Structure formats: C-alpha cells, structure tokens
Image (cartoon, one colour):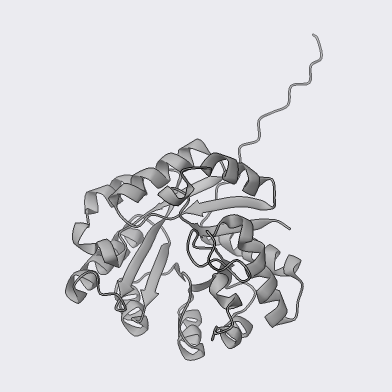
Length: 263
C-alpha cells in the first residue's frame, strides 16, 4: 500500500532523538512521499533543510495564525521560489485559542493567500472555529487550489468547500470515538480528499497518548475505507493520486542506463 503523508512536522524537537531512522523506516513501510509543513520562520527554514536532505520529502512555507504577528512576506517570497517548496501553509484562522488578534490573523491569512496565487502555489489551510471566514478570505483572494487540513467542519461546510473546488484532508482524529466526521468522510468524493497524520499531534486510535508519526498513516486510510465500504488499498491509491496532482509533485529524474557495450 503506497501512501502520501501530506501533513507532518518531522522537523520539530519531538523527533530529534530518532528523526533519520524514523524517516528511513517510513520509506521502508509504504510511505512514498512526505510533505513537511511549516508554521513560522524557524519551521520554514528547518522544513526546507529537511526536504533538501531527503529526495522524497517536500516542504511548505507559511505563518500559522498563532504566529501571525511575526509574519514576514519576504521569507514567504524567497521560499516560494524553492523547488522543494510545494505549497503555502499552514495558514488560516484559529478562533479557538486566539493566540493572535483576530484582525492580525485575517490580514496575514489574506496576504499569504494572495502570495500563493501570485506564485502559483496551492494553500494548506488551518481552520479552527473559523470556517466561514476562512472560506470568505480564500474566495476574496481568488484561491483556486486549497486543502482544508484536519477538516473539522460539518457536512454543510464540507459541501461548500467541495463546491468551491477545494480539497479536504483527514487525520487520525476520525478514528476517535467522539469523532463527528463519519458523514463527511462518506460525502467526500474519491478524487477530493487527502490523508495526513499532523504528527507529532493527533495520534490515531489505538495510539492516543503516544507520539504520532507517518507510520500510523495507514490507520487513517483504514478508517476511511471502513466508512466508505471500500478497501484500504483503494483509499491509499486515491489519496496518493490526489496529493500528487494537487501538490504537483515533480516526477523523479530518470538517468539514462549505460549499455556497457564496448565500441
């Protein structure tokens, strides 16, 4: 089963003790590609470094709403030109924790969405208790390619996101007993969803309380398969193709094989 981990934070200190061995283990256990997501200046830099070290890891550049007051447009512009940076994110609004003023969150989200359009990059959206405002800003900035990471809206908002032409991404939270995502998972068409772990956060059942990692991504695929009445392999294949297309992952360079024949 070939998987695309579309939202990881492997550059965080949680992985300092075993980062390289874990990444190699992931690549030996079905993970084909990893998108490492940034959320401020430090993680934009560390995500890019990680992506430059591993051919099958890519990075993003973006300021999370919690870090909105530190926004640096020039950093986003520099990173947007890097080949290993595939998206602007994670960016958006978080009206649950309110670690940045509402007005700053809105302005910075709009600025980054504008830059994504300018640099022709998709957007990874962080949306917590701000569904309609996130939608409105993306529409205002004419964003055509967006994925709502760790989707938490209801079925009505899910349909609104789909009608806008955007993608929905699911994490291990759909495996929790208190999950309200069952109908949303069933609603989303096979060509409009992605899967992620958001590691080290949100470990799926039965690993709650542990450090999450891409090694648990298959559990997200298995839960979606259960809810849709299909096989995990079908979920993995669809989510993989969707991620490859959405993030426009460059095909690996194929070096010509020398014949070895003497002239």
